[in-house]
Image (tube, rainbow, N blue to C red):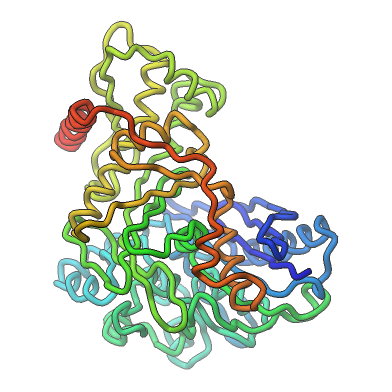
Length: 495
């Protein structure tokens, strides 16, 4: 029996999962690591923490599963995207902490780039908006602020990578400096249409192209681990950024299929096939996955606050003791109260991209209580997903294709929230049997490349729906409720 080891290196923890030849999870291990906040708006990780928790969780999962390196056919890697690492080519030592995707320190540089008129060129090439979120300005910052870094980079002494690249380098003992197309597409340095690093953007930011990793398919040969790590070499055969890995794990392989992952925030990707669609509604154009040298594109939208609104009820208002209580409370809410909560605690994401507005509640009465607030909190996630879906549909305009929404992440466990989501978007919402879609996507990419997992079509056929939530709200009620939401958002942004 062949096993696949899936590394899921996330923002707050690192996880490793062992999948068997039938793609069932047989063991897992997880470790959290420290978050560093040197200044307001700055977020960093110690790259050594990322590496050490990766080694430890891989070994821990192997021990729990009772397997050795000889039993593992291949490794798949999925990772927090955009987080930026620069290390010494000779020693492998990072020259600075990893700058995390959440970090906002390069806001001024991004504003300067926009003011200088570079946004259209950058968006045409990369599909992205100029924003500190992406890797390129983080890399430029490190080169500017670490003594001697620009000279060392120009002399070929330094390497850049997103977290996948750094882990591949460490696992292979420096033999392989590579990334996959999905991670490359999040750097704001990669021309997604031409499938190569953009010299124009690199020159603009004075980034030597020799620092950049080789870009490969998501399912490809990424080298072998050094024997010392796990007792014997193991091939690395699959890599994808976390949201793209979830898209693969959800088998969203056909144009019109959409997955939405509900964690602290929410990330939704709509498969647009072999065509990169330029958004007119402030969404991102990105690569969903790349197989056999052919990229499949997606529109992506992000919601800043999804599960975090439930955390606010628990920790901020203290009206619940546990997230699971929100469903029971929502069922108790007065149906005659139209309470709308806009959870813009850190601004609004796509398609509004308003960083300045803050949260607001509308329709409060003397009888409004925890039940009505819990219901409004869950509904806010459905409304925000409707915003994304409407923007995606307007951008894509693929006539006759009914969007299919597959969901995962912690909030997808709430039947009430998922039913409301189906009601407000007016389309079915499918929740899979296997919820660990990110790790599954990485595992399938590696196992498919290694020849022990089925091809794309057969994998998609195996995808199993645990629950389909069908819309049962009257269309007039749906439109009235969504109109209330739109008015509430506008009022929030106007405040």
